[in-house]
Amino acid sequence: MLAFGNLSLANPPARPGASEPAAAAEGKGASEKNPVTEELHRGTFVVTILIFLILFLILSKTAWKPIMIGLQNREHAIRDSIEAAKKAKEDADRTTKELEAKMAEAQRQAGQQLLQAKADAQKIADAMRVQAESDAAALKDRTLREIDAAKQQAVSEINTHAAELGTAVARKILQRNVTADDQQRLVDESLAEMASKN
Image 1: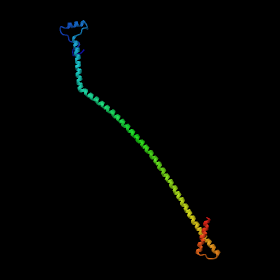
Image 2 (image 1 turned 90 degrees about the vertical axis):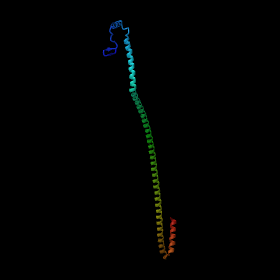
Image 3 (image 1 turned 90 degrees about the horizontal axis):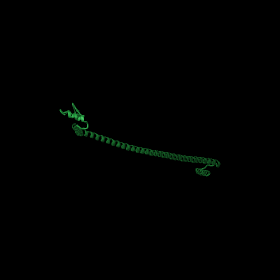
Image 4 (image 1 turned 45 degrees about the vertical axis):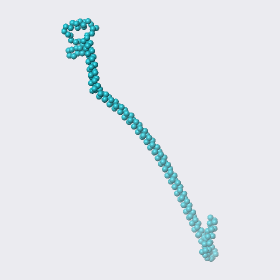
């Protein structure tokens, strides 16, 4: 039942002189419908539909577009955020793979450099050993040559002294003077004899 001030739409004011038939109608029972009440229900329904349509038009022109724009903007923002997150994940994965590849390459290069350093150290050690062996052999050869030269010189000096001594002894034995040519011949003979004995 609608009420506006003192008016009630469900129970309209009675017209003068019509109170008896209305009372009689009410007394007859609720089975009979009041045409005014039916018309009010139809009128209320039509007014309600019209108000709904007017409000719908007003809201569709004023509020619906901003709401839809806001929802679309929100949808685009969410979609952009999802795409940005996917791109960031792809970039992170790509960067991770690149870093792993660079680390593997650095480890490979470090291994190669370590192997090269070991090979270079071995070459240097081998070269130093060969050089030391060569130096030792040269020193040994030089020492042996010096020893041989000293031996030859000593033998020569001994031969010379022996020849002089032999000449002196022979002079005394022969009691005569030996000339320089005789002395040289005696020395050469003595040296030859001594060399054949050695």
